[in-house]
Length: 234
Image (tube, rainbow, N blue to C red; front, side, top):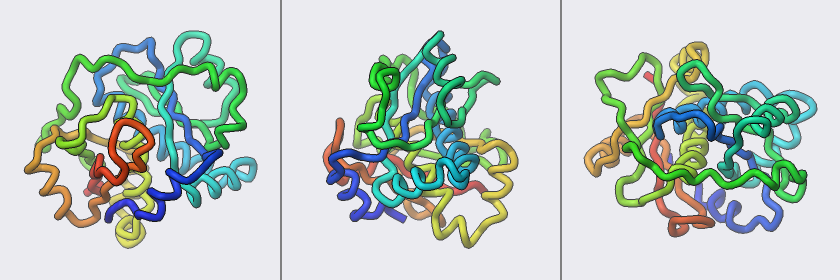
């Protein structure tokens, strides 16, 4: 399943978009893959845990109906502590420590001074993205591969993987095959980032339940670019 072209256009057209902010804890040294896996976990955990809570139901409905837009920013120290203490959301972890927090969606105009002050997450990448080997992936993992022909920063990739995990978890394929997705949730949303290659990118596309994200072209890549594929847990 490809990202719907109408949704792509909806993300481009909003003047005051609904946004889920993915906040990366920048004082932990973690690999790019750990950041991306934590972002996937935080995104889907947030929607699962808070999407049907009365106080947040309307926000999630507006966000999902309009665009699913995500923006990655960073925080550390007292800013991270304040975020976890004062803002509604869920975290994804790496090596037993919270690494990424997904906030309940909000209109961009509703950001307070604290959120507006968080800087974009755009670190220098010193390790390769996609270091998992297919024969070493834990059971029930959802797998992702980034398009090798569309270079992206790690911050951009965080948002794209966050989009892919929801597309896969909420797909028609997931509704028709609930058991593996239930196991995936019950085991803590395990995920893996596989090395990018033209062969794997093409092979993923032919896999049952594969979803493909097409970007709206607001940052870094041309509108309509295919950026990430996800295949369901098995």
